[in-house]
Length: 132
Length: 252
Image 1 (tube, rainbow over the protein chains, first blue to last red):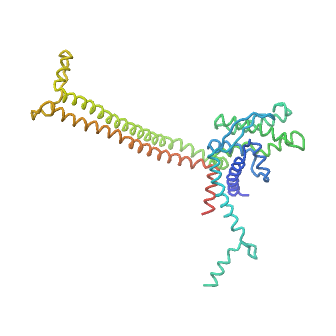
Image 2: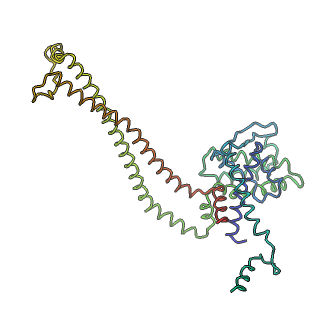
Image 3: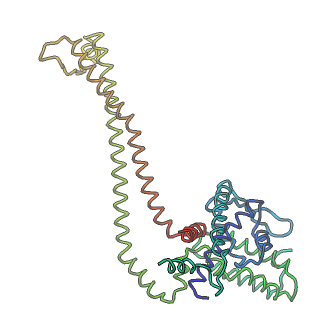
């Protein structure tokens, strides 16, 4: 895979991962590992698990997320995260935008393919040729 | 059971090495953030290891660390895309050279701009102080003049009596506005009163208008600050912004 494509995929994943994190925190509070497990439950987590921690830190800095350390009976203290009101509002604004985006991406993929296997975009050109 | 007791010495050494490398990559970030991140990652390793089955201790631990990601990859999320890109580029000497050139020529220029900004700020502050000092002095002197004029109108000899009360040392005198016309002291005081009312009114008007001046200056500073933030914000493109720009590029 070339570097340019790899960068695009990383960028795409990062943005969507952030939205997914907000989605889980919208439902309930999580600590890092529980969030990783929740994210992985939906399918294979293609990003490295550790990358969610800096994302959570940044979201905390931006005021999207509130974090606090809580003592745990099962081991070391855990840092729990929950969405702030700003985070909830942002998430509610981003979700419809994301749905529109998914629809936009799916639109050309839903078009029937030509006999040659390509996407059916040449037909219009043929019609123009016949008309001219 | 503590983390130290849970693992065998070799496994503990691997964890310590991982955390040390993480710490190394975190150099330059705020100490509190680093400490928090290290604690969280250590807890993550602990918990993931507990839930890991199959294979010996070292195999399980390495699987956990592999899923967690290399410290550099974990930290890359905190770096701006430009920094990551720069680190990946092979032409690093070129960037070092650019850095040296910026340090040699760019910083003095930057310092000059900074100096101009400080100057503008100081001048604006001085203007504000002078404006309000003038307004206040007009208001106070006008008010004193009104009081004195009213007193003279009530008792034209009050100035002489005050001078006498001061044992002849007092030398308070009012400018006789009506002297060329030989006007009586009451009429003179009335002219003085009118002028003092205008003076005090002007001061009050300046003070009242000062809030608009303040608002205007605050507005100007806000615009300038917004521009500065916007300029530096572009360099710190974070995932949400990246995602938004990606949407924009797809939609356009």
